[in-house]
Length: 136
Image (cartoon, rainbow, N blue to C red):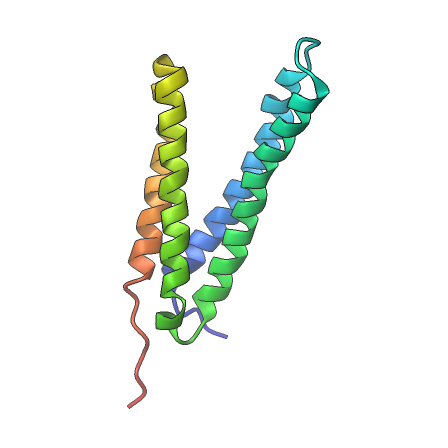
């Protein structure tokens, strides 16, 4: 098997890496900070699964892009790439809007997320430009 789309291959690896770091960061830093008596178990539970839904989505995106990287007919997987790119842009909008509305002083804290989403989305869009090789 040969890689047909190196952009998708890189995006797939990055997505799996993002999933792992997101899950580990949540377990090591974010979720333990919720272990105070003032927060109900229901809120802690909701925060846990919402946090890990993002990790699960990133794993799924990674697997999808790794499969797409080897797919012979790149034109047939282009729509999937556009959908995932759109989801990433929507994620950034939610992150920006939430930070802007509730913690404007924290806008600088979303710089890494912003850069990661821009690079991730740019690589996806570059991957959509890869053409099928025509046999002569």
